[in-house]
Image (cartoon, rainbow, N blue to C red; front, side, top):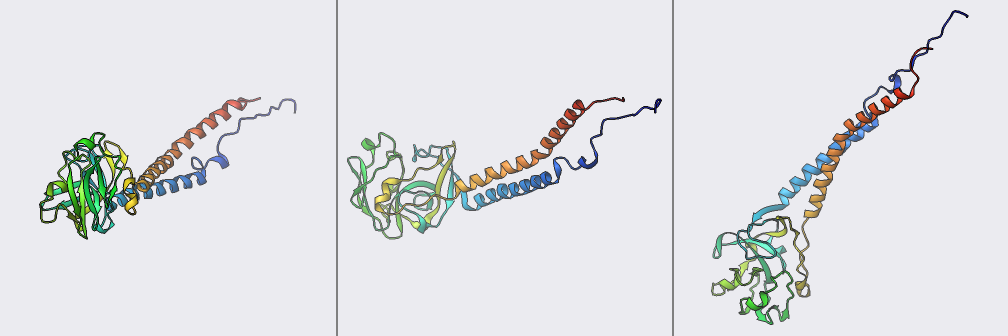
Length: 260
């Protein structure tokens, strides 16, 4: 025993701990996160492409709600789903051979006129319209009472002084009204510049139910959640690798080295 020496070396990092970076459970969860994220991300875009159509509004007839040159997202809807207060995209051959964006202020059976005290009147009720420009009252176009035929709509621009809307077509055969089936879509949001969802036209609630917003918020949430899951899942591997390397260095620095 006198001349013998015992050699002890530091244990190597290997053996049972030499599995995949982050462990099998972490790798599986990372893969699931990426897969689910891709489903939400791509599914959200596909859903949006089916439900919505983009339009550019070329004039200022809808200011301040929608400015000239703004890009909007409009939900594809059937004309029967249109309600008072909706901002819609329609096409009518007697107006123009192009999509037009205006606000529905009266539907079939309504009587509409303007203006007493500078306010629109529908079925004898003055309508509160907070989305109009502040100085609209003094310059709004006046027109006599119009009874809207069944199956048709009466539409105005929010910039009442310059908008070429139903008031500019009162002498037409349809008395300025547009058929419901001429509507292609209902505007949900202004996406450029980013103004967000249109405010609900609460002034028309006393006349009947309003339209419910489309699924745009849900679609945006799905796309955002999908992007977060994909990025988070993809980042797991490099983060786990760095964390493992840091732990290995910490163990190496803490263990005694050499032979004694």
